[in-house]
Image (cartoon, rainbow, N blue to C red; front, side, top):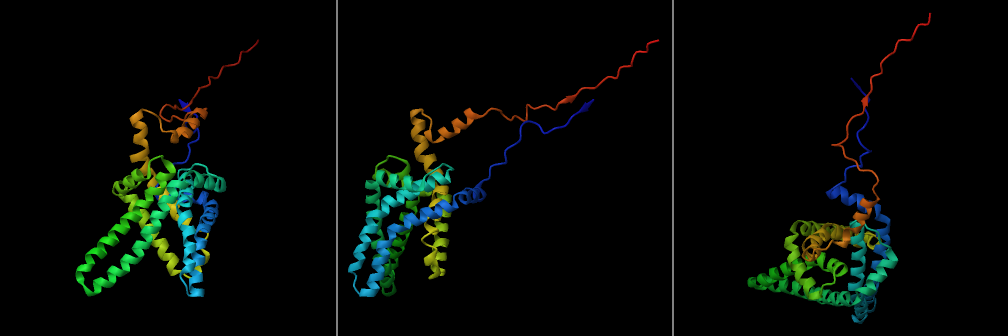
Length: 292
């Protein structure tokens, strides 16, 4: 019995990459768009940068009032860049300019409030940490508030891995978003720590390469870190915040509707287990008739 061998079923799609390989595959496809997105987002920091430059030129702190423009725009702009990076990290489409400004307008209230809160905390940490450090040199017990302040700053910073993603992805109130973000940090401890470490090495790289990094900051690190954040932490939000909402109501998560469309469009299904090799039929030679 003979068999005509051929690959079973239809051509197999390549195995889906995971982890860091998946990250670089997705990031590589969106690299140039993310650079353009970084440039748009960087514009909101120009007022405060100009203010700092004028402080050195004029010897007055009055120009720092320009930073108020950045403080007001920071929140909504961060929500906008976060939503686009979330879509890219989940391999969904997004239009850089249109989606950025559309998200900016839709989330201007929550984003602005969160941006102002961030500005207040940044100012507070900027004053408190050097002060406690100086006092701790004289009185050792002042190391207690110093360590507590550092710890609180780190936790508050890591909460931001989830805050702006939830503003962009849910309709929750800001109070609930802050509460959820606090609990999501330990629930998603591994992605939270990994994202935090990425912030450290990128921040360190920018500092070490100064002043050359001045030319890099407008086009790369901000969108890269936002993409890392979305890639690592959005699945945590989906698991603990978004999916339970639909499960309680017995509804399908509309986020996966695009997968259903793909299934409906499928014409062939590759089922290797059910495939059988084609049996080659044995041909029987027939003797020719002799005519006499």
